[in-house]
Length: 244
Image (tube, rainbow, N blue to C red):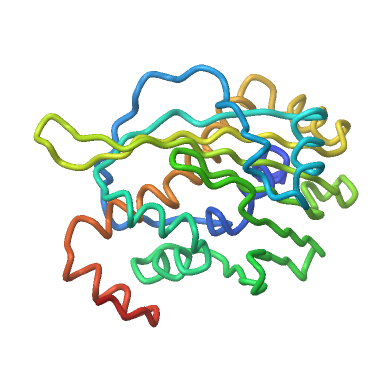
């Protein structure tokens, strides 16, 4: 919300559930992630990998984008199977964050691969689902309506968050992952123009910070789970998961 001050609703709360819509996140550890030099443009979107029912919607965001942004790429120690599992289960990732002290809002699995976040107070509602899953790319398509400012009417939007990642090793041979998210938003251009005008030169940096929270949501938890196996098993049990 602009008065708080948020850029287009915190980039639509960074797809809401994908970062838990955190109001005051509290991370109980210092992640070992290190920034890498900024990458180039957004990776190519393989439309053939998008489910047929979503292709026109994804293409619409790509062809009529109101706002684009990207986070700084990050590298962190984690195992790829854990990281991929988190990408596929944002609702459980929210529960895991809660167990380690983060203040996040609940999201709901609708049961058909679609996740939902609602704010009954302001009438906001967002639905999102995986649009692309390849060996080095995970993209989410989202749509809905949000109240991005008390001064503006409800804004309907469509968005695409594209997370590229790759697996490697550090100098000591430990497993590491590098990832970066790009964000594309299609909504009322007047709302976007007003938000960027009010925030001025701070808008790009603010957008980058919100997307950094999205990377932290997945990368930070993957790092945390891979630091101590027994601690991770205990955390899984606390959210109702049984790990062999």
